[in-house]
Length: 449
Image 1 (cartoon, one colour):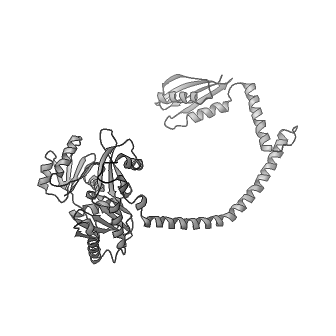
Image 2 (cartoon, one colour):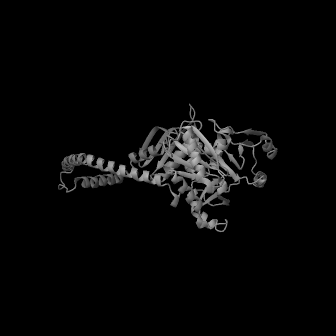
Image 3 (cartoon, helix red, strand yellow):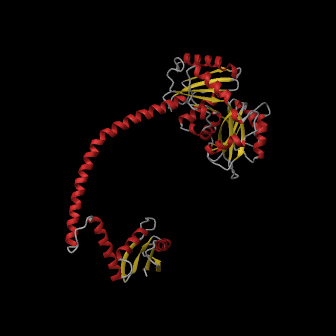
């Protein structure tokens, strides 16, 4: 989170804002003004910024503010719940335009989409598709830019409210959060249901949907609602309590506080964000370009700085390599005096070693003791198995090993791993019994023929 962030919430009837710092429990300044309609946003925003300047945290728009986040009430959006075979938001976004064609009163080409995964206990993957009209978003960003505000994030902050409930509700509990015009149901911060409450019967309709989906609520939190009304809506729920926002943040500042909560805890990147595609944040893009330029300059400097050092090291390595090559040629001549001096002593030495190994196999037959022990070491390297070889004998390509293992199963696993190594054609496990200090003792016999 930036040193100081301005968080603005565009509600259905109010425009609210607060200024937060990373370690603050609440806003250092909170102002809420009446918003008669989205068309009157500019005048309401002027009043809001003036109020913030009077309260102290913002000195001239947007002076002293490092980042701006803007929340839009879900009432300004189009929403649909759909089943999807995908579990990644990016893939779901790629198909939303096709899946929701004809589902809204406006053409999908006039909408910008994002989605939020909904969790359920029936094994299905559901997503809440959320869309806002491009004309509305374009006008909103233009109005904000008139005040020198270029938000890095624009989306529904109320969708992040389940994260607040996560801290208030016990683990594993299905908790509902009910405000004057919004309801969410979640478990441990994972959303199960999100909806706008339209009119007096909106809450009842949402609860009917929850019952139809088999989503039972264990605990209810409310903000800016009559507790008696909430208890009447949830008659079977024993725990009904008011959600108190810290830091003196009022109830109508829930969206602002929820947004700050998501930003401060690094959860904002998982939230629905409409600053995508053609509406991507220009300020962030400019900062990224600037960082790339600085990085490129530093890389060029480092390359120039280290190039001289690398040249000296390469020269030294070449001289050392020539010395090693001469020593290897002399050693080859000493070992094989009857051969002509080879052009490539290293290659010639490898050929001689391979020939000697083949001769050793012909003379002795089977697999060399070194190969046997190497296969055993590789198979027994797992510390969980606790393999310890106490006796090892190898004759005529056949090896016998006696040792300890942490369990009978570990001894059997050693046998299977030796078989799968490909070194042996036959591996026999015998005399497996309990050891004097626990575990198991065993005998393994291998045959390479």
